[in-house]
Length: 256
Image 1: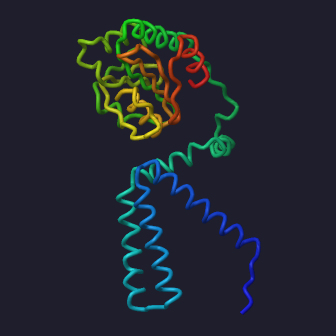
Image 2: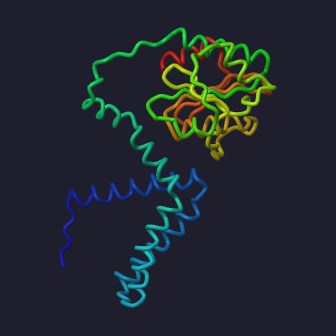
Image 3: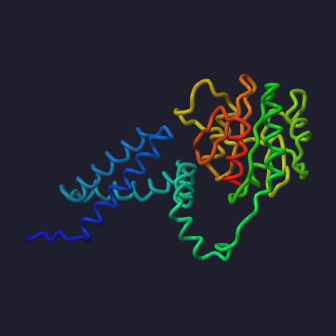
């Protein structure tokens, strides 16, 4: 029997290969690569048994396992699936498409220089005194669940207030500060910790927490190292290390 192979088949194969590649990357980053390989081996065996050998009994059993296994995989990898869907929605091309349908496409938001300078000066002061700090600035992704893990403050952004919160004897200095809508929303908050192997080993738990929240949201995470006094920023799962006050101000001006 003659098998027709057209452009739709090429597109079909390409999309399946692309999907498998992204699933492979997702599993590799989440340290679940062996699980992915095991799933692929089971799928190949299932197709071989049901389609090639046409074993009805074994094929029907494996069909049931596949239907139940999909639900199990969704439950098992719900955090990884959530991260994948977020990254898909946060892609710049999709954002450009969505902006075409929003009423804010022609509006411009003014950058509050005074707010940025309060953050920059507090980070610079804590850097000189080697006071550890972790500040998360909310953007389009709400961080209400993160704010609920700490103590609500709801105060104006002020250099002295930020430094007092992260003072070594303060009960809130170990957690993260969340800034939302140009106000300090909460402090002492708990952030998700990234398990990315690419993070340098000399970076501590604050940096891993900053990386974690930047991977799960579009927020800006600023870290002041307690060991070195270095200032770092994590955005979209990427670090910018050893920043000067001028560079930090430039990043916040562009990103906020």
